[in-house]
Image 1 (cartoon, rainbow, N blue to C red):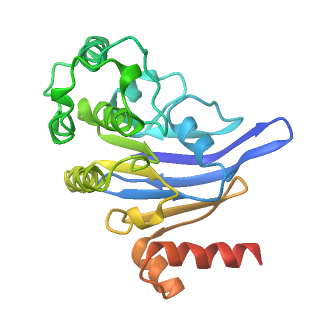
Image 2 (tube, rainbow, N blue to C red; image 1 turned 90 degrees about the vertical axis):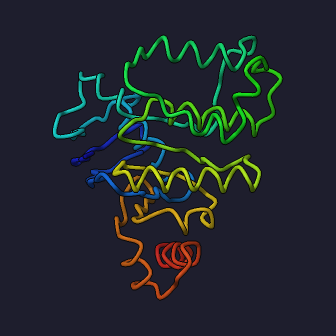
Length: 236
């Protein structure tokens, strides 16, 4: 579905991405993991068309994304920190996004109901807690029923009940054949979700393995212990 072919990106003397290649297929939930500064954010922004690689190509459903902004309509993006106009209400934000997208197909409002956002429509964005803003970002990412979901630190700031509801929603969407790409520092949240792991370090893609391969290679069942072992080996 998404093919990344030999992309590199430099910011001055910093190499953010170094000849990165991989493929992400439908029906997978992929964890994008690595230390701070490893290139995860640059890779995500390149997929979203927010960063233009210096070299290489990215294709979405077989088509080069360069100069082809329409593919973004099939991606739901949840940023790590959602920023919205302070003076607008939740209802106004949702209505504005619906007007902008002008999508004729059925909307996915499961999270609006699960998170009780439908009871907060008159609340202004500036009055919301960080957790409620995070719920709003999650609801917007899923709202237009996209084929691909890119979720940046999705459970950060969510209470345990909301976090569990969100995980079940992610699993359900993966089962429908969607591609879900997650970045997270809370590796314990990913054990029940991910089917594959991409590990990056210093702008390099170190590996892209199934969770079964990773467990076999490290002898660890839990993702956090598997990744700790990989990091230890890479820092030796």
